Image 1 (cartoon, rainbow, N blue to C red):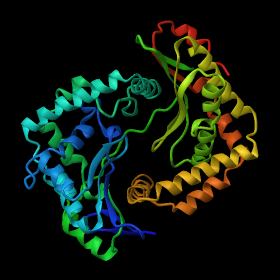
Image 2 (image 1 turned 180 degrees about the vertical axis):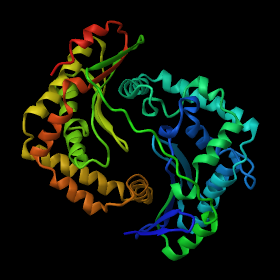
Image 3 (image 1 turned 60 degrees about the vertical axis):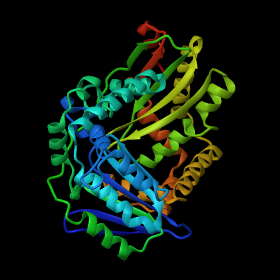
Image 4 (image 1 turned 120 degrees about the vertical axis):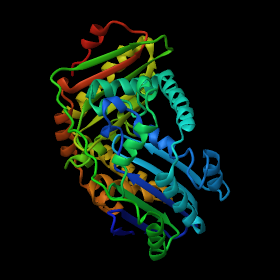
Length: 421
């Protein structure tokens, strides 16, 4: 399915030829994210990601960079996460060299002009305002802060306004020089490609990238003795809820059990929570559960937007589902549905080159090894009803419950009394 190479400068290259496509995706993943920041520069990784689009010596402006890719019908984008940052171009395969030229130019030759930095500050500050104005995004950020506090995982990836305002060219360049290096990067290429020619192009554009000491992050303090609640008062038409528990890393032996458990609980439109809160109770339009796993920890949370007058009913209903999956063995049909759902979603993810590049690249970056789709499907299929019950008993305990609510509420004690199951 793929070939893996290690260049002399420590750069890891994954090349996955695909049949039946005329497209290719070039994904460059760097092992740096908001988790690697100090509080004084929280948001700088995301800021840096934006600045890579602002112009290089060869392509003088953001417009020139975007037009270069637009002219061939390609898609250029990037993201910043807690533990990784990615840049990708998806385009017709005969333009593969252009993709590598553009991405390497952005990463290695960006100008970081002061006037462009000031412009981008304005863009990011408005992005922060947008996040603040969306209650569903705001409640998720409050939940993470509740869970992890004054640790990097408790901060917003995008950063805080007062920090962003004080980031300057010197800080950006220092962070770039220290944290971006060839030996902390994966180049994952999937699509209509020939491995030998593709590898030669990667060497041409990234083979001289400097090798440096890899950055490290602080270990996660992931202890909790009592339930925790955070309210943010807003005059909203709905109550926005995040209710969840602490779980574990993507390296944990029960990782696939947790994935199946989450799917059954709230990961699909016929899941327990969706059926109960929307179809049966009629108190929510949107409800789902979400897993987040990191190097040394994780969480599972339920997100719901509910009628204000039925907020307490919704919280009680969610907690009852936590209790039910902890106390009762999942039926065979429901278990198989959850497993087949995950396997089916994986198959769909790998239909196109962006999915394949991401599937391979993220595993190599975060785990240092790759499990093929059929291997992952075997892991999913191995999960038993007893495994689900065992993990549910481990994670769904009162002292690990965390609740964040955005809406017209001020009485925290009212919610404290609900957190029993």
